[in-house]
Length: 145
Image 1 (cartoon, one colour):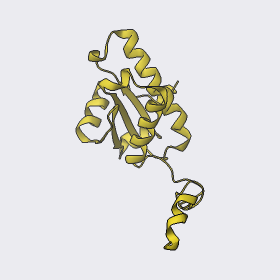
Image 2 (cartoon, rainbow, N blue to C red):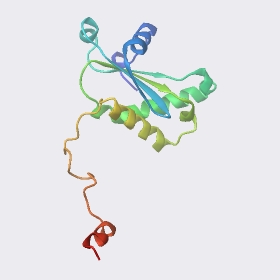
Image 3 (cartoon, rainbow, N blue to C red):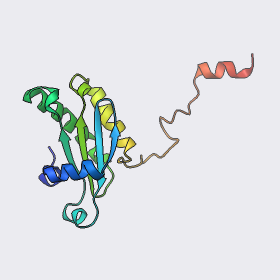
Image 4 (tube, rainbow, N blue to C red):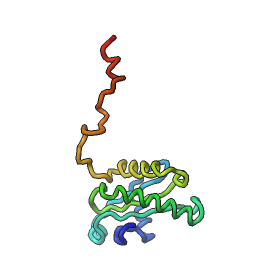
């Protein structure tokens, strides 16, 4: 669970982020991001994160399950989040209710990546998993035979 100072709870904060923040859309969720400046940045340093699940998603038990899954996926990525005074809101969309756990994690990863909220990888580009490896199938047709 997030510490109290890292949670978005105030309706005024949610409205401000919706109005001034930037949104990133995925089929399972929407992410709103707003960088805090001025007094609000100094009052609460670091990221503050909120989660929203509409009543259209189902009864309280279903909505709470969706929020728990989103919170856990974000918690696993928190060490990789950029430093700075950012407010983030994750809004669950309809398909999130029936999505598998790997799909939820992939959606959160994609949203955070698209928003530029993930720190650069320590390996840097071109190291492991860069896709530059040549497989035997690609090599076979390259000789002009």
